[in-house]
Image (tube, rainbow, N blue to C red; front, side, top):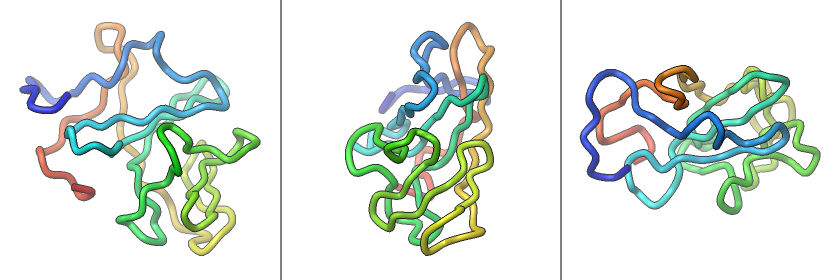
Length: 128
């Protein structure tokens, strides 16, 4: 999506049929920086999206490889750098160095033209 002009307040992420299955996650490099700024997790019929940044150390990205945002059980989001685990539904840290802190949620809308979309942000993000 790098260099793409966004018209309107929503940026398409993917088609609804490209969403990860429950127990998996998918990241998105919205700014063409070579790393994902946002990731999406599906669980129990809900779609949850967060910035790819650990609250313990905001410049640290969560996965150790592309789309590896979850622990081995698929029940928690995990910062592979610090071992912190976060609830999928609310992004609250339940174990690790930042217990009680939260991932930054991203507002998404899964109904625009059959695409999952997020609110547009300026070209330079807090992570870039």
